[in-house]
Image (cartoon, one colour):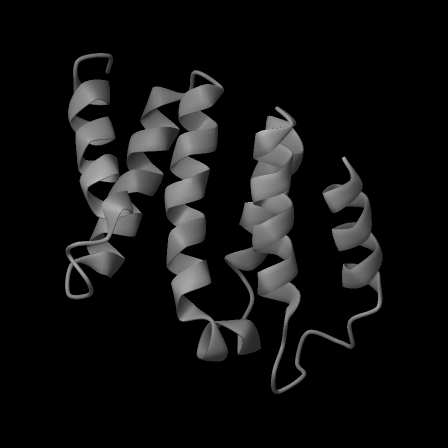
Length: 120
């Protein structure tokens, strides 16, 4: 709870999103993780979704954009929305296919897609 409060305060102090070293995506990602940790899935979803349309932050933190897709998959899965979860896991895997295949999130996302295939 304290982490969420501090992150929300810090995010409000950031300059406009077009700043060359934009940190909005970093704050939104950290907030999404904090909300997940406290079970506030709707707020987590909103925080991760904020990252997707960001432009300048993607230049310096592209991994957060792609990892937000993975995190959204987990949020939707926890909400019981299997179809949406698979959609986001597959988007994550598509972006990450030529990157580090040893990332634990890659194997996890593949496993989750396989597990959810039986639910759909």
